[in-house]
Length: 65
Image 1 (cartoon, one colour):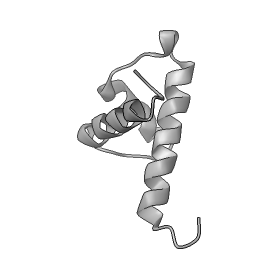
Image 2 (cartoon, one colour; image 1 turned 90 degrees about the horizontal axis):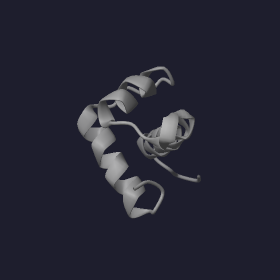
Image 3 (cartoon, rainbow, N blue to C red; image 1 turned 90 degrees about the vertical axis):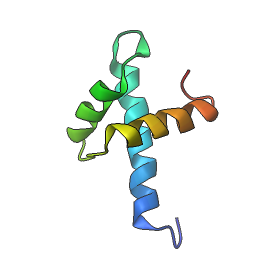
C-alpha cells in the first residue's frame, strides 16, 4: 500500500464492502440501487453509476456474475 492514493484505497474498500453485502443477501443477488443504499451504512456514498462500474469490474475479475 505504499504511495497508494487515498481514492484508490477507498475504491478498493468499497468493492470489498460490496462483496460482503452480496454475501449476506438471499441468493447473493441484488441490484445496483440496493447496493448503493447499503454502502451508505458502511460510510461509502457512491453514485449508482459508480456502483454499476464496480460491479462490472468485479465481474471482469470473476468475483460476481
